[in-house]
Amino acid sequence: MDNFTKEDTVVLKSGSPEMTIVSIQDDKVECSWYDKKHGPQKEIFHKHMLKKYIPSSNITHGWGAF
Image 1 (cartoon, rainbow, N blue to C red):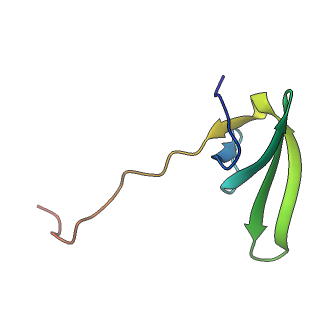
Image 2: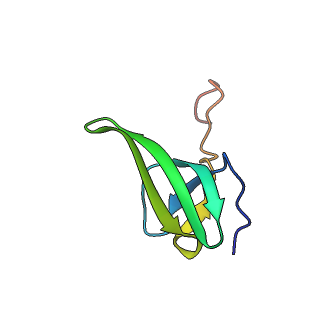
């Protein structure tokens, strides 16, 4: 299981937007995120539902495809 800390960026294992951890208490993690349609959002999830967000390494450096 991931070791989470406040301000980590996480996502639901089942898929979700990127969320920021606001607080952690026992096995419950409060997360916040911004939804374009509904504005700021907050929800509490069980730790086992989350994983740390790892940004895609699909970075281009302006060199074009070779």
